[in-house]
Length: 299
Ligand SMILES: NC(=O)c1ccc[n+]([C@@H]2O[C@H](COP(=O)([O-])OP(=O)(O)OC[C@H]3O[C@@H](n4cnc5c(N)ncnc54)[C@H](OP(=O)(O)O)[C@@H]3O)[C@@H](O)[C@H]2O)c1
Image 1 (tube, helix red, strand yellow):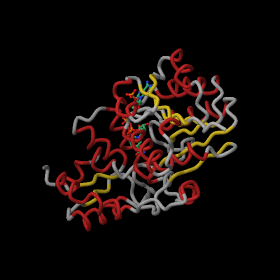
Image 2 (cartoon, rainbow, N blue to C red):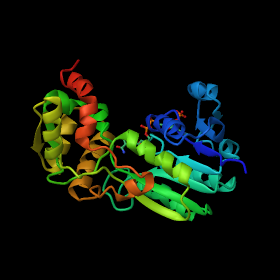
Image 3 (tube, rainbow, N blue to C red):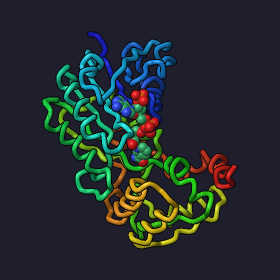
Image 4 (tube, rainbow, N blue to C red):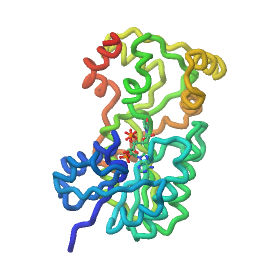
């Protein structure tokens, strides 16, 4: 029997790169079993050198997708990063996956995709619906909670200024590391769970902004204070920094999401899928404390 062909889209991205690593290192998948896609094959030349098949696929060009997905048994559709274009792009990818007879599809979504107030939730809801409406017999929706990595990558100003503007009140989110989510996505691709599943992938503890700030201060040595604000006051502050409208809407609605308890679930689905506990926030901070301290110092 030939081994199942596993396909990863978005393999050049921050999550996709970690998924490929997890497939090779944690699941000992032979490179000849893997297909990865990108819009620019030269960006994944290093994977081709390892014996992984690299194909070009642009979700905005449906005609390219059937050829790109041909022969895949299980496909991981990593949501793309262009907010506003994702519903159609992902629907194109799902349609092509269905057309070529993919046996299992995994998709990276977000917690409470159908009910969350987050400004981009509608795109994940539409993508989940496209999958449910397709004739793909087996699929797993991975509702990934927020990444710890958002702290250095998007909220570095919090580390640098010591002020965490928040309209989340006591709302908690069960965040986790991108590496742990990559492991879960790889597990979903390899296991190709039968039937239709929606899994919410959470970290081991739900934390409020105050609780996260206290842990950052303890490990990194910062002095971050949370400034509690109303939705309107947070919007006014962010507008005053000259941030784009879309970013202001994203930040304010993410706080509404936390406040409303749309992302504070348990890690049961994560443990069942991977057989492991995701790292806790303190453990993740310990592993990166020097880099975070440098950011805090503006180095
Ligand atoms: N949960 C969270 O806290 C959190 C935080 C950050 C991001 N995210 C989301 O997680 C997902 C993955 O994030 P990431 O950090 O890995 O993103 P990233 O590093 O920005 O990578 C984006 C990927 O999307 C692919 N892509 C973009 N447009 C495409 C198109 N038209 N057709 C096919 N592929 C396309 C790119 O592939 P090529 O350029 O190679 O074609 C690239 O691999 C995104 O949806 C992102 O919004 C979640």
